[in-house]
Image 1 (cartoon, rainbow, N blue to C red):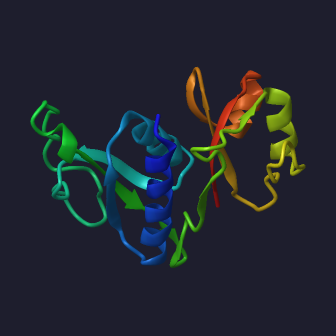
Image 2: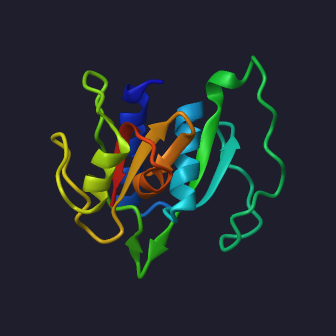
Image 3: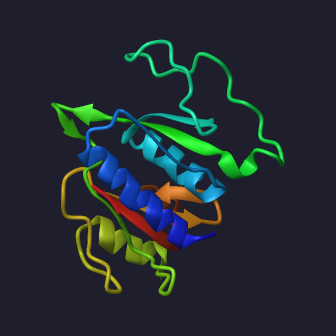
Length: 166
């Protein structure tokens, strides 16, 4: 699991939303794919599609379903695989406006369910600022996959804090 690559993805998505892009791509890895699917479930993206270096063919700008199925992953094309993300906007403002890493490659921050409970209630815990803004999400990697912090508290499991999305 490379947090360096994930921090590059976070800054790329933040820049893409500020530039008002409708479709952008990030390098594909299992960690990035699981995080992007969690972000889509939380409502930050309209679509997450695996593809190659060129964007997937879409039916129309309003329908973000791919026209053809993605090409299969082989040993020859694995280095060029990309995740194509459809960014979402509301009232001409990006839904994803800020995305920051919490755990750094040199300092990984682990937290149990009790500490996550403090964070989602807006209180600080272990040098991590609580969730204080409306719509703010905190994503945690656990042994059950990548989840939002509120879901981790419901299931009473902890894990490593990945990123904060506003």
